[in-house]
Length: 309
Image (cartoon, rainbow, N blue to C red; front, side, top):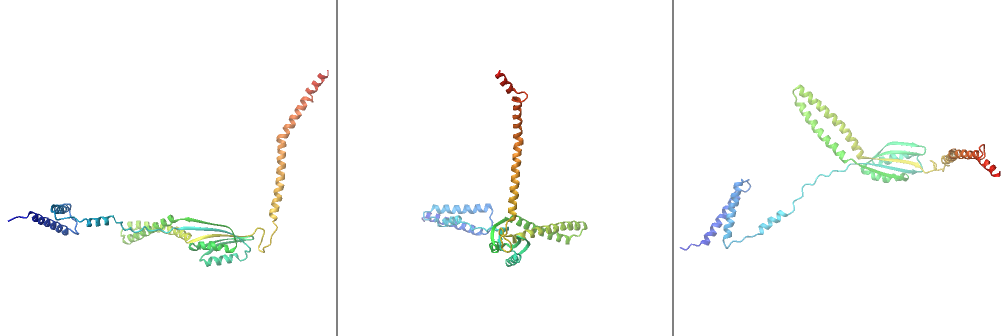
């Protein structure tokens, strides 16, 4: 009987390939040891080698290319980091030139109330008025724009202070202290020894005091963030009063008069100073030369007499 070695080789190759596939399927979903993995890889290599020896087997790279493309595909973006809201303390200053101050306080109070705010300080005097207004932060820009309705704006400024780090730091500290307070309260309820009970109670009281102090700071900071402050200064136009009458600027005239008098005496004092410093030495020097030439010594007089002889 004639033996076909090619067919026998193909049969052995198929048997080896089937054995390797059964081994891989049996290990699917389980964590294999290094030895098992090595055996599987060896069987697969043997099968591939046997298949390569035959002239009727070819490799299809389509599956490999698909796996490679999947490996090179971009990964899904992970969860985005939490974005914290910026915490700002905003302050505004507005100076207004007005025609009247008779009902300024009522107008400012009504305006602040319409924006959800309130007046914390009001001060009026003969020639002007000043107000401190707290406005919800989300309506700060609107309030600064509407402030010009009370008069002519002569000065306007806005200041913003970023306190985000301080805000979230205090908030985190509070949350930690709350957890510690709850744990200490639980330990206190379970304590049986008097010494342990007293020590836990001491620590709990200390934590509660820290919480109260931190809560107070946090509330003040939150209030400054939630409500912006606007300082409003009102004044009459130069030389006018409540009735709109142009008043003579007596104060300025008086200041000018006093300034002129002071300037005159100051100039006179400078002249006397120069006379004392420079005039007296010059006069003394002239007197000395006169005494030397024409006085008792009379050198020049004696010289003339000699020349006459």
